[in-house]
Amino acid sequence: MLTMPYYMDVDPGVDDALALVVAKSHVEVKGVTAVAGNVELPKTFRNACKIMDLIDAPNIPVVAGSAEPLLASMHTAVDVHGDDGLGGYEREVDELGSRPTASVPGWVWLAAELEAAKSPSGIIASGPLTNIARLCLGFPHVLSQVRGLTIMGGSLSGGNVTSTAEFNFYADPDAAEVVLGRVSGIRLVGLDVTHQVLLSWDDLRRFRQFGQVGDALFRMLSSYAGHLRDLGYGDGIAIHDVLAVAAAHQPDFFMWEWMPLTVVRDGTLRGTLVAAPNAGDRSAVAVATGIRHDVFFSWFWEALEKYR
Ligand code: RIB
Ligand code: CA
Image 1 (tube, helix red, strand yellow):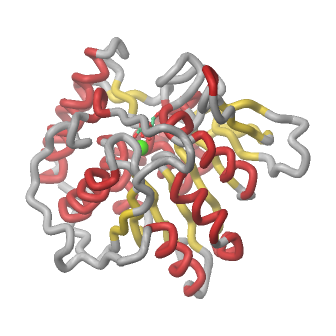
Image 2: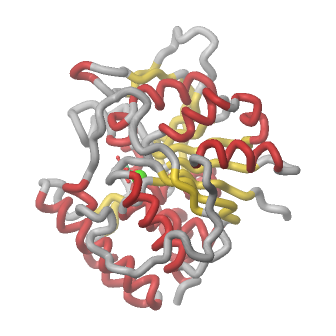
């Protein structure tokens, strides 16, 4: 069966790194665009290159996108992912070496890719939605070539930046509002589900079985888990962005509810996701409300086995 290829828009970020590793095992990754989020763009771009090198994917393009939100002030998550964005994971990377890239911004490159493609692709977005919003605003005609946009973002059950706002939607609320209002067929995986699927510290030791990729992930995740513990999140280790890959590849792992959504763009509720039943012509979004834990974790560890 021909499987659909995916573009990934990421802000590595330790859980973005894990999402790239898992995605490469389960789907065809056609390209990666980096966006400012967990750390500034030069670091998210460099980190995306590092991870694609780590998983021996020299021919997958990595292209730098937006360096700042559409309108909002910049807000990073260095307290969770470390100043470098990958928990201090050191690796030499030749950002402008043999790897394909582009001299245009990531969303411009993605538009050209979609326009030239003979068949539709999926997009998995695991950072602030700035690049995706710029794609929608600048190149609306290419959205017909997107067969499913799966987003890690938002929350209807409490935030992780403020009491109500999740990081990706807080970091660029205007972009989230643009995307939720202009793209149909969105699958949204928010904290409502990602907080149901946590790795344990015992799970971390399991990564050491998977060769140099597993060792690198062990180092990144150990640092990330330490930061989460220090910040009062307890011992559970959220792997938010991996759930977006799972939702794109295996939507039947999840329980879904459909509703139009809007995002508060500023003030004390900046980035808060709101169900908007009277949102005019806004398309309903499939919101993940639950997950089948056993099948997800079988799928997750199966992806990592390929790096053994
Ligand atoms: O709220 C979790 C999200 O914010 C994840 O995508 C994580 O990488 C951070 O970007
Ligand atoms: Ca992310």
